[in-house]
Image 1 (cartoon, protein in one colour):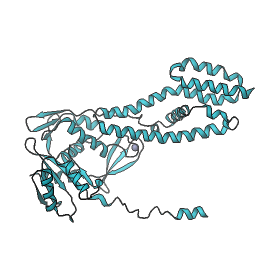
Image 2: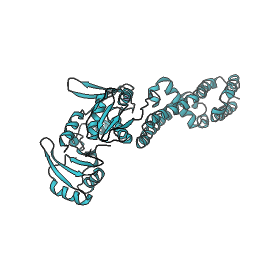
Image 3: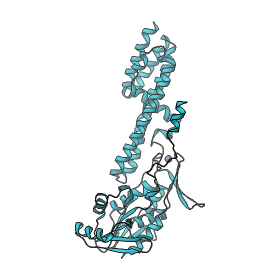
Length: 278
Length: 109
Ligand SMILES: [Zn+2]
């Protein structure tokens, strides 16, 4: 009796899950009411599956999280970077997927699959994957991908100041978002653009030379890649610390805690460029 | 026992050949704005074993621009070329001089 019922129930649930987005709310009570009287063993199984359904909402939220990361780059119109980032995240997801399969296999195999071998096959891979992600998100949200902090880098605002100078109006704002000292960013800009400049009364940056916003975007993009993003988890929620003992600069990630040393060549750069200027 | 022997076959601290300490002397290709819409490309950090004079000569002809060599006390000899030749210089260095891309850094916008 039990043997006959169980596959059915699971099948139903399988269907439910495939329809979860549309009929999430209406179906859940059904799933709860029908199987519970039949077999006790199923309850564990169902508990897991019910969880899945509830959390399938989260799944979409997670997708949003990924979008947020790309959005943050959207603001800078980081087309190339964007692709890279996306693939990086995909890679990460792919790795998690692998891990997810193993995890779920273990869980599914140990209690139930030993009894009914057919059961595991009737549960769809995607559902298991969702479940893994939901559990992961619940317990370790940081590991579930870029959903944590959302950093929006505002696009640089540039105006021409006179004929030969460029006014970069929102350095301070960008520096605040990136959690960097504006001085540091300005140093980088000067070094990369091979120019010099000053800060006006409203803390805006005036640079010698004509630069278009996309030029500055390009440089900022590289700055972010080099001095902001965490190499390990690609989070932009990092801090730049200076170790007084060895005079090295370190990126300390606030998301995963990893540190990475970065070259403090800034000043060196600037001097070289300035001196060579004809 | 055999597994332990297997472990011995790989020494994680052995020199792998591609040590990352080497490419500290990058070749920097930079751009600087001059007056108006004119620009200057500088190539800094080319290894000494290359004949910069000859390279500059070829670059000038290939890119149809003027150029010269500037001697800097700290940075050695630097090639200067008129105009934005960064990508072309990069291409030249990798294809003609067989320099590795990872050792070349392009700066600027
Ligand atoms: Zn990190």
